Length: 169
Image (tube, rainbow, N blue to C red; front, side, top):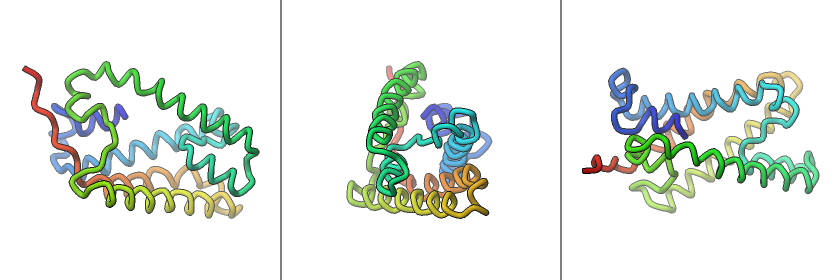
């Protein structure tokens, strides 16, 4: 989420280099995917499968690739990690507040459109992940799927940013 604050927050250094908001969203998605790819390629990722998203763990559980206890442990760890990982965002101060500390919320398209977008992107993520891991020739390229996938998903799925807040007095 710090990536969102750096790329899209007030006084973003990237705004000078890439004035296009759509371009910065694409860079943000690319950075998300690169982070996931790096974790997947790390020692921890190769042991755990790099399940960062609870829906991935649940999908693998549905496919009987994870036991119920392992899936529950993964999801609990992911949720706890999200809470713990959000605390350092407060250190961004005014820049973080300018984008609500990167909180996800429906944009001007409303809740229904946001829900549809999340459904489509989640389905696409799981579908492509299963295609890659289920084919021996593609499996080793699975981590490389994430930077371009997230680049496109964030670029397409977040075109209605919330307006930035005015600076505090």
